[in-house]
Length: 228
Image (tube, rainbow, N blue to C red):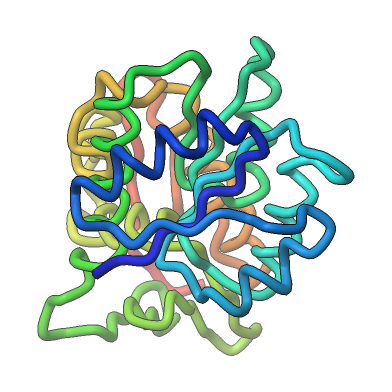
């Protein structure tokens, strides 16, 4: 049974979310003390976190940073604020998805299910190690290593890189990536994919590989093969 942590201070909304997700056999936890979110997170060890942006004491962005400094657990943001920059900020901090309030509970459930499938089932291939452009990619550990160092990617970043390398030197369309990542493009914005790819390219740039992910305007992305 997957353990889900819902970081939401609206008690009625939390109870509704818990009831809906429990019907799908998820083990759902809430936060008792919003000043000790990390302590409770560490104790629960959730498989996925749903977090509101507007929270007491510190906002959801703060707790996302804290969680990301310790864990790559998938994170879905909730927000009642109508600011596009909130979504961009969420993705830049390493969130996996973003839901605007008010939302239909079927959408939340679909996003939770898709994220769990993507994160915990996609890397079941027999071959977990891959070489690309002089680097070794460990799909299980979400690590890319070469003679310039080693970086750790988020689950989304690893998934995108894996899909691009599977079709190296060929264009992978944005629609294909969206469908592979989120399984239903109606539940994701085009801008979210852009943020994820830009973040992946920036991380790869730390070990000299950023230029090997190329954007084809109006078409998609391509992972070039070569030796740095």
